[in-house]
Length: 196
Image (cartoon, rainbow, N blue to C red; front, side, top):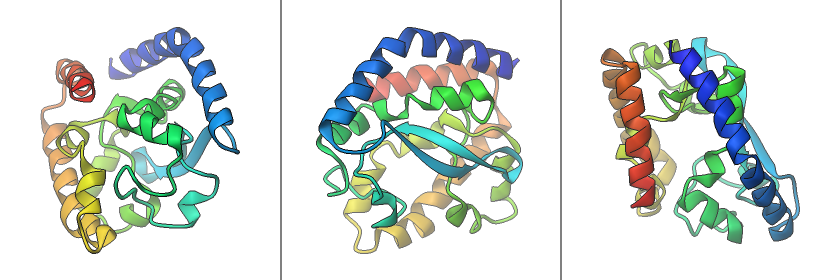
C-alpha cells in the first residue's frame, strides 16, 4: 500500500512541479557553473547503494573539498541561490524522482552516505530494512541541524557521537508504529515546519 501511495504521489508531484523544476534549473545555471542536479551515492533499503538526486546548491566538487556534512547556512561552498534552496528544502524536490524509481519513499529514515552507515550498530542497521525517505521524524526534530553543527568545535565528531545516534533512535521508534496515516501526518508536519 505504501509503495502505491509513493508511486502515485511522486508521479503527480513530478507532473505538477515540472514547470518549477524548469525555472529552478535555469536559475541554478545562471547562478553558478555546473550541472542542475547534484548526485550522491547513498545507502538504501537492504544496505544497497543508490544515487540520490538534489538540486545543486554548492559549487562543483564541493563535497570533495570539505566535510560530508554541511555546517551552517553560511558554509562557503554554498552558492547564493543554494542558500535559498536549502532554507526552504527546495533542493530536496528532485528526490521525488528517487521515490518514483523505487529507491526511496516519501517518508522513511533519511539515507546516509556509506561512511556513516559503516559506523551503525547491529540495532541501528534495522533502519535499512525499509526504503529511506525524503522526510522523517528525525528530519523534523533536527531541522536546524546545520546551525547546531556550526556551533561545535568539531562538527563531524559531534554529528557522529551526538546527532546521528539520536536520529537513528527516533527512526527506530518511528518504524515500530509506522502506518500510512502516520506517514501522511509526517508529510503534513514537514510542510508546516518548513513554512514556519
